[in-house]
Image 1 (tube, rainbow, N blue to C red):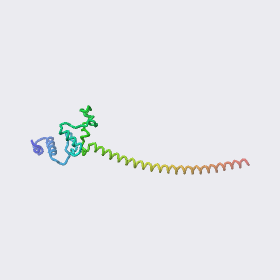
Image 2 (image 1 turned 120 degrees about the vertical axis):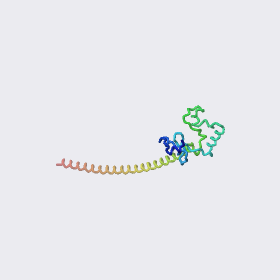
Image 3 (image 1 turned 30 degrees about the vertical axis):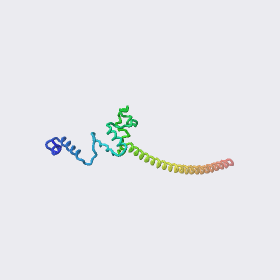
Image 4 (image 1 turned 135 degrees about the horizontal axis):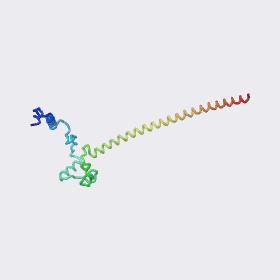
Length: 173
């Protein structure tokens, strides 16, 4: 039965109808990104104009890939003696317009570095401002403490003088 007949409900199971409807949805270009085997969106295509795309096309024309053999991805390839766990193309063959390209990653790292630097500078300014204010507060507290100590010293001196005077009076009597 065709997908249209399955979707119209000609006595097939609901599972079969659902899969037919899903197949029809995949065939129509509804604006969604094309999906790979596991349902994940496929990566964006190559731009065809950058140096990475030119290296990629050169490898296709020769019938084998053109790999540098020195980047981290090449060193991981089994043909260069690696374990083959990264499963990434050579960095020379990266498309510059592709979101996972090295230049895109470097640009993202540069943006993050700029944001982190700006945050660090603002943090340092706030900390310096707080330290200046803290020093001023500490100086004010120190001055107040010294003033209280001076007042207490005067009060103690007056009490001591009063006690001495009282003692002298008692001795005279």
